[in-house]
Image (cartoon, rainbow, N blue to C red; front, side, top):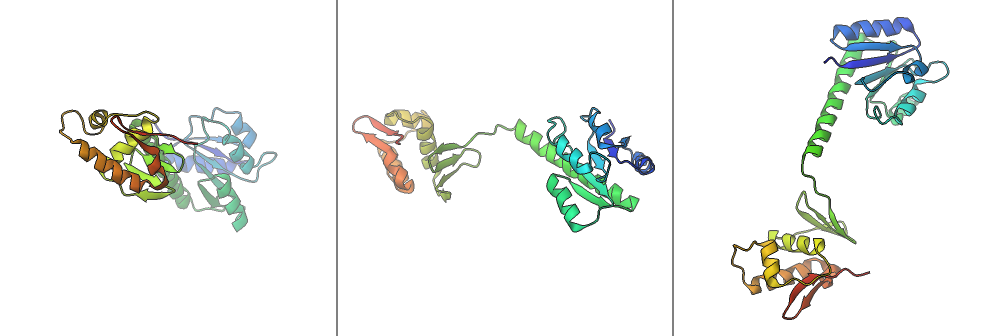
Length: 236
Protein backbone atom coordinates (compact mmCIF):
# COMPACT_ATOMS: atom_id res chain seq x y z
CA UNK A 1 0.00 0.00 0.00
CA UNK A 2 1.37 3.40 -0.97
CA UNK A 3 1.97 6.07 1.64
CA UNK A 4 -0.77 8.71 1.56
CA UNK A 5 0.02 12.41 1.89
CA UNK A 6 -2.42 15.30 2.19
CA UNK A 7 -1.29 18.70 0.86
CA UNK A 8 -3.24 21.67 2.24
CA UNK A 9 -2.69 25.03 0.53
CA UNK A 10 -5.00 27.74 -0.83
CA UNK A 11 -2.82 28.05 -3.95
CA UNK A 12 -4.20 25.39 -6.29
CA UNK A 13 -1.20 25.61 -8.62
CA UNK A 14 1.18 24.91 -5.75
CA UNK A 15 -0.93 21.97 -4.62
CA UNK A 16 -0.71 20.49 -8.10
CA UNK A 17 3.07 20.98 -8.28
CA UNK A 18 3.56 19.20 -4.97
CA UNK A 19 1.09 16.49 -5.92
CA UNK A 20 2.82 15.83 -9.25
CA UNK A 21 6.32 15.59 -7.79
CA UNK A 22 5.31 13.56 -4.75
CA UNK A 23 3.42 11.08 -6.90
CA UNK A 24 6.54 10.69 -9.06
CA UNK A 25 8.25 9.55 -5.86
CA UNK A 26 5.62 6.85 -5.39
CA UNK A 27 3.36 8.52 -2.84
CA UNK A 28 -0.41 8.71 -3.08
CA UNK A 29 -1.34 12.39 -2.79
CA UNK A 30 -4.56 14.28 -2.24
CA UNK A 31 -5.05 18.02 -1.87
CA UNK A 32 -7.29 20.46 -0.01
CA UNK A 33 -7.47 24.20 -0.66
CA UNK A 34 -8.32 25.24 2.90
CA UNK A 35 -7.96 24.03 6.45
CA UNK A 36 -11.75 23.81 6.67
CA UNK A 37 -11.90 21.52 3.66
CA UNK A 38 -9.19 19.31 5.12
CA UNK A 39 -10.85 19.08 8.52
CA UNK A 40 -14.07 17.93 6.87
CA UNK A 41 -12.22 14.96 5.35
CA UNK A 42 -11.43 11.58 6.89
CA UNK A 43 -7.84 12.25 7.90
CA UNK A 44 -6.98 8.85 9.35
CA UNK A 45 -5.59 7.29 6.12
CA UNK A 46 -2.84 9.89 5.75
CA UNK A 47 0.73 9.36 6.89
CA UNK A 48 1.77 13.01 6.47
CA UNK A 49 0.23 16.48 6.23
CA UNK A 50 1.99 19.25 4.27
CA UNK A 51 0.30 22.47 5.33
CA UNK A 52 0.48 26.13 4.29
CA UNK A 53 0.20 28.59 7.17
CA UNK A 54 -1.36 31.73 5.68
CA UNK A 55 -4.83 30.65 4.54
CA UNK A 56 -8.17 32.43 4.89
CA UNK A 57 -10.25 31.85 8.01
CA UNK A 58 -8.38 28.93 9.56
CA UNK A 59 -4.60 29.11 9.30
CA UNK A 60 -2.19 26.22 9.11
CA UNK A 61 -1.47 26.78 12.79
CA UNK A 62 -5.20 26.39 13.50
CA UNK A 63 -5.28 23.15 11.53
CA UNK A 64 -2.31 21.76 13.47
CA UNK A 65 -3.90 22.58 16.80
CA UNK A 66 -7.20 20.98 15.84
CA UNK A 67 -5.76 17.70 14.54
CA UNK A 68 -3.90 17.33 17.83
CA UNK A 69 -7.32 16.87 19.41
CA UNK A 70 -8.35 14.11 16.98
CA UNK A 71 -7.14 10.81 18.51
CA UNK A 72 -6.90 9.00 15.17
CA UNK A 73 -4.44 11.52 13.72
CA UNK A 74 -2.87 13.30 16.70
CA UNK A 75 0.44 11.56 16.01
CA UNK A 76 0.41 12.02 12.22
CA UNK A 77 3.52 14.02 11.24
CA UNK A 78 3.06 17.50 9.80
CA UNK A 79 5.29 19.75 7.72
CA UNK A 80 4.57 23.46 7.45
CA UNK A 81 5.31 24.91 4.02
CA UNK A 82 5.00 28.70 4.17
CA UNK A 83 6.22 32.03 2.85
CA UNK A 84 6.64 33.10 6.49
CA UNK A 85 10.39 32.80 6.91
CA UNK A 86 11.02 34.65 10.17
CA UNK A 87 12.72 32.78 12.97
CA UNK A 88 9.76 33.42 15.28
CA UNK A 89 7.38 31.85 12.74
CA UNK A 90 9.53 28.75 12.45
CA UNK A 91 9.85 28.43 16.21
CA UNK A 92 6.11 28.85 16.65
CA UNK A 93 5.40 26.21 14.01
CA UNK A 94 7.75 23.71 15.61
CA UNK A 95 6.43 24.47 19.09
CA UNK A 96 2.89 23.80 17.91
CA UNK A 97 4.04 20.33 16.99
CA UNK A 98 5.22 20.41 13.38
CA UNK A 99 7.90 17.90 12.44
CA UNK A 100 9.56 20.27 9.95
CA UNK A 101 9.22 23.73 8.43
CA UNK A 102 9.91 24.54 4.77
CA UNK A 103 9.96 28.13 3.51
CA UNK A 104 8.63 29.25 0.14
CA UNK A 105 9.90 29.49 -2.51
CA UNK A 106 11.34 26.02 -2.08
CA UNK A 107 13.55 23.68 -4.04
CA UNK A 108 11.59 20.54 -4.86
CA UNK A 109 14.53 18.22 -4.19
CA UNK A 110 14.73 19.65 -0.65
CA UNK A 111 11.00 19.15 -0.12
CA UNK A 112 11.25 15.53 -1.20
CA UNK A 113 14.27 14.94 1.03
CA UNK A 114 12.49 16.44 4.04
CA UNK A 115 9.36 14.39 3.35
CA UNK A 116 11.42 11.20 3.26
CA UNK A 117 13.20 12.15 6.49
CA UNK A 118 9.98 12.93 8.37
CA UNK A 119 8.29 9.73 7.20
CA UNK A 120 11.39 7.75 8.13
CA UNK A 121 11.40 9.17 11.67
CA UNK A 122 7.67 8.56 12.06
CA UNK A 123 8.07 4.96 10.92
CA UNK A 124 10.91 4.39 13.40
CA UNK A 125 8.83 5.88 16.22
CA UNK A 126 5.91 3.58 15.39
CA UNK A 127 8.18 0.53 15.37
CA UNK A 128 9.58 1.42 18.79
CA UNK A 129 6.07 1.93 20.17
CA UNK A 130 4.95 -1.41 18.76
CA UNK A 131 7.98 -3.14 20.26
CA UNK A 132 7.16 -1.70 23.67
CA UNK A 133 3.56 -2.89 23.33
CA UNK A 134 4.73 -6.37 22.42
CA UNK A 135 7.20 -6.72 25.27
CA UNK A 136 6.29 -7.84 28.75
CA UNK A 137 6.80 -4.41 30.32
CA UNK A 138 6.48 -4.42 34.09
CA UNK A 139 5.57 -1.29 36.03
CA UNK A 140 7.84 -0.02 38.80
CA UNK A 141 7.27 -1.08 42.40
CA UNK A 142 7.26 2.04 44.58
CA UNK A 143 7.11 2.61 48.32
CA UNK A 144 7.46 6.29 49.21
CA UNK A 145 10.94 7.27 47.90
CA UNK A 146 12.03 3.67 47.35
CA UNK A 147 11.57 2.46 43.78
CA UNK A 148 12.29 -0.83 42.06
CA UNK A 149 12.52 -0.89 38.27
CA UNK A 150 11.57 -4.45 37.40
CA UNK A 151 12.66 -4.02 33.77
CA UNK A 152 16.22 -2.88 34.43
CA UNK A 153 16.45 -4.79 37.73
CA UNK A 154 17.63 -1.67 39.59
CA UNK A 155 16.64 -0.20 42.94
CA UNK A 156 16.54 3.53 43.70
CA UNK A 157 16.42 5.38 47.04
CA UNK A 158 15.64 9.12 46.97
CA UNK A 159 16.60 9.15 43.28
CA UNK A 160 19.98 7.50 43.87
CA UNK A 161 20.70 3.96 42.69
CA UNK A 162 21.36 1.40 45.43
CA UNK A 163 23.90 -1.27 44.57
CA UNK A 164 22.14 -4.53 45.41
CA UNK A 165 23.21 -8.09 44.82
CA UNK A 166 20.85 -10.33 42.86
CA UNK A 167 19.68 -11.95 46.10
CA UNK A 168 19.14 -8.64 47.89
CA UNK A 169 17.17 -7.35 44.91
CA UNK A 170 14.96 -10.45 44.88
CA UNK A 171 14.30 -10.21 48.60
CA UNK A 172 13.26 -6.56 48.62
CA UNK A 173 11.16 -7.06 45.49
CA UNK A 174 9.36 -9.94 47.20
CA UNK A 175 8.82 -7.91 50.37
CA UNK A 176 7.53 -4.81 48.56
CA UNK A 177 5.10 -6.84 46.46
CA UNK A 178 3.94 -8.79 49.53
CA UNK A 179 3.97 -6.25 52.39
CA UNK A 180 2.50 -6.36 55.88
CA UNK A 181 2.92 -10.05 56.49
CA UNK A 182 5.55 -12.15 58.20
CA UNK A 183 7.12 -14.90 56.09
CA UNK A 184 9.02 -17.83 57.44
CA UNK A 185 12.58 -18.42 56.30
CA UNK A 186 11.34 -21.44 54.34
CA UNK A 187 8.79 -19.31 52.50
CA UNK A 188 11.42 -16.69 51.66
CA UNK A 189 13.78 -19.40 50.40
CA UNK A 190 11.08 -20.82 48.12
CA UNK A 191 10.19 -17.38 46.74
CA UNK A 192 13.73 -16.06 46.26
CA UNK A 193 15.91 -19.11 45.62
CA UNK A 194 13.42 -21.84 44.74
CA UNK A 195 12.70 -24.98 46.69
CA UNK A 196 15.35 -27.03 44.88
CA UNK A 197 18.25 -24.99 46.31
CA UNK A 198 19.79 -25.72 49.70
CA UNK A 199 20.00 -22.44 51.64
CA UNK A 200 20.75 -22.11 55.37
CA UNK A 201 18.88 -19.80 57.71
CA UNK A 202 22.12 -17.94 58.31
CA UNK A 203 22.30 -17.05 54.59
CA UNK A 204 18.89 -15.40 54.82
CA UNK A 205 19.81 -13.57 58.04
CA UNK A 206 23.02 -12.24 56.47
CA UNK A 207 21.24 -10.99 53.37
CA UNK A 208 18.53 -9.31 55.45
CA UNK A 209 21.17 -7.56 57.59
CA UNK A 210 23.01 -6.22 54.52
CA UNK A 211 19.76 -5.17 52.90
CA UNK A 212 18.63 -3.21 55.94
CA UNK A 213 21.85 -1.18 55.88
CA UNK A 214 21.50 -0.40 52.15
CA UNK A 215 17.88 0.70 52.42
CA UNK A 216 18.69 3.56 54.80
CA UNK A 217 15.55 4.73 56.63
CA UNK A 218 13.50 1.93 55.06
CA UNK A 219 15.71 -0.70 56.65
CA UNK A 220 13.53 -0.37 59.74
CA UNK A 221 10.51 -1.43 57.67
CA UNK A 222 12.00 -4.91 57.41
CA UNK A 223 10.83 -6.39 60.68
CA UNK A 224 11.78 -9.57 62.49
CA UNK A 225 9.42 -11.83 64.40
CA UNK A 226 11.50 -14.14 66.53
CA UNK A 227 10.86 -17.83 65.76
CA UNK A 228 8.63 -16.82 62.82
CA UNK A 229 10.59 -14.90 60.21
CA UNK A 230 10.70 -11.56 58.37
CA UNK A 231 8.39 -9.14 56.62
CA UNK A 232 8.09 -5.60 55.27
CA UNK A 233 5.77 -3.34 57.26
CA UNK A 234 4.34 -0.26 55.55
CA UNK A 235 4.18 2.84 57.77
CA UNK A 236 2.45 6.21 57.45
